Image (tube, rainbow, N blue to C red):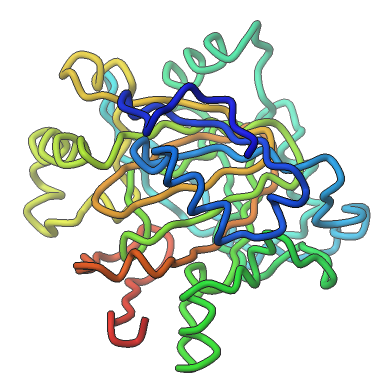
Length: 320
């Protein structure tokens, strides 16, 4: 199967990249199992580059009138690599209006030489010019006849929860869309109920991700509790609130392993034990959904907390 990684079983917990053939790509569950067999889950994040023949949507020329019902302005406070992000809801706008805003002089991506230059600009200017994020929009932009890796219907345990139990958890077993501009950010967090999630970049500039391996996740949680005592006193799972930003320089200073990747196409993010993800977007449209595999039922105990964008979510093991 297609992989760009040395493996075996990824002892360095590095983010792995996979390039499946179209035949390999057709069986979602089987390919995810193969990724796990190579140790991809140890990084907390893996990148999958779909085969060139696969197109989830024929055209994006017809989405300008689509409404973003509750865009949020992301206001960031803090300094020296430690920040808190607050979301202020704004009035609805169309995708066309959002595109013009994202491309405007005020909000556009600055000139940069390479990713490292852009990353420096991001952390240096995080508290200036609060971006607008079109986040948590229920829906899918996959064409109805797309079967492979269709985030709206991956045919995993979470789809069974909806079909057999009638339980719908928006953004977990239903897809969400995200319209981003320069500096729109999702803060450090684990996935809802520590499930897997899958993100597809429909178009735009690459999304940048940071990930901490599951086996080191508790170290970041302890570090964050020390830096943000007020937040941690109110909720043990406060990182799920998606408000806490900690820069790579702080992680390096305190010896917490992490890896980074830019997503040109597709990413699978796993949060089984406590892998934490953080990232920022330039100008792009992403689609996200959750999924569950049979092996995840072993010893699973979900930890819930109030999400920064939506409400808390929970589904019982018996329902899975």
